[in-house]
Length: 354
Ligand SMILES: *Cc1c(COP(=O)(O)O)cnc(C)c1O
Image 1 (cartoon, rainbow, N blue to C red):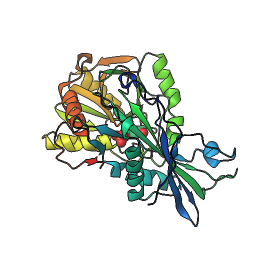
Image 2: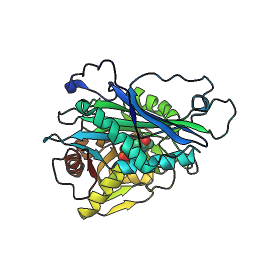
Image 3: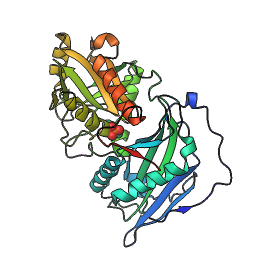
């Protein structure tokens, strides 16, 4: 792929890497490539970060034909730059795009574009503990028409944001509200896709949880409001009676790359990890009997986020005495150790930029 490069007239001043927050800052450049029927993907370029000009009829604004990804670049202590399983993000975006009748980006093109942009923006990868460069690839339908039908033109772009901890609380237990009114996804819908539409449907519940003093919601399935699905924008895992239980990938749950990595690690450590339906009643029973030992969410942004409290219909249960459980901590240390190049990667998950 021949990527055209346009130099910025002036580079931005870098922010203080000590207080990055999440998604507050963007780097100097972005990657952009367009698709038109008959032509395929064309004109890949890296150019100064800037606004897009959009026709008000652009179908993505009306019908939400949009998908995205999220991954990170990490700076190691010896100054190497690592990506974590970028091929998995490429494959997942293909699945999301396929479901929304959007043009798929070939895996090698996706990975090459990510690498090329991060390479240009190396200086933006922070070097402090717990910091990284968040990478956000997006595809949207760019056709101009008011009719509803699959689009024939698309834009794929990538932007970068230096980030610190996802939650202001840091790696500490969060309080979770079990949502039994609103639902995020149903089987047959787009729950397994990383698409904006899923998020549009979920902010109302997020707002409600925050008003009640909770950080996130625990989603239940859309049909029975009974089976646990995800926690906010993360996959969820529970340690019950020494075994790990996580909801299966049946169409309404997103196939998290962190989820997949953690399941691999747990099984290698000799844990039994079950991917099966878990009802909220079974979960609350286990909590009441003291068999629910630990609970955590998994996702690229926060990596692992311990759950310290669940509120289901006013029934409140505290997990691990509202402390980060030992297995939760061990998993966090091990996976982030691999990601930041502090410990050897036996899985070949990290991809070094050269
Ligand atoms: C992105 C995302 C996740 C986590 O996926 P990772 O690949 O681990 O970052 C989980 N659930 C939802 C709804 C997501 O959008």
